Length: 314
Image (cartoon, rainbow, N blue to C red; front, side, top):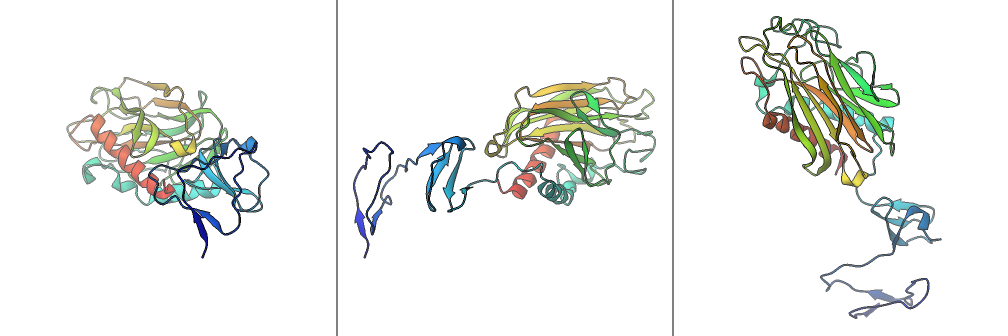
């Protein structure tokens, strides 16, 4: 039977801080209500180790142990979304869930009727070739993206689309540990012919914590809609980070711009972030209803993030 030492405190007096316990002796902390204080330090302060040693890494804020060959980190997975395998898996997973994010089913839906880059005259005459979407990086825009294109890269920004059917959604990510200013923009003719509802924008979330995600920034542009018959299609943009990824959005929204003309589909959104992902969705408040509210947009964002959280195991 192994021996046990039960004391209130053990303090080392050696310069290295090593505590050497003779073979067959264990430490029992099962009766304590406090916590063990492990050795801690940065990546560069890792000691020469042997298999089985454990420490807290302050560079990534995770426990790690040495397996005899390398240091292995424990806890939530690090930010690796820029890797093609992980990014493709995320896009594929979210594509299967996108119709569940709206708050009230069919009231939020709109039709798609043209190529995979825009909406033409679906549901009467509301779009007229509007809702073209571009990736935007440091003020420059890509060509129009196709929503049936699984993935692509523009100026080192990877993007993946969830398919050309309601809701139209694209996800983008910058290289790991790289502070980058990027987002999306839109262009085209909405076909409102001057009769659409009043154009306006609102902040959905600003450096918020939403379902464990933080920081979350989201912005909504209510463009043209016709309350007599046609559903409007609004522009939703969102930047998402997580504490376990060491995410930052130092400036929140960097560029939020739109055209107040009800016929012009132009808007753009950029944020500066590190270890985040940015996504956009064309959303709607249904026919004969009008503008989308902050609460409705928050419901859509929250539902999206709940599924993303399940995917990453965060």
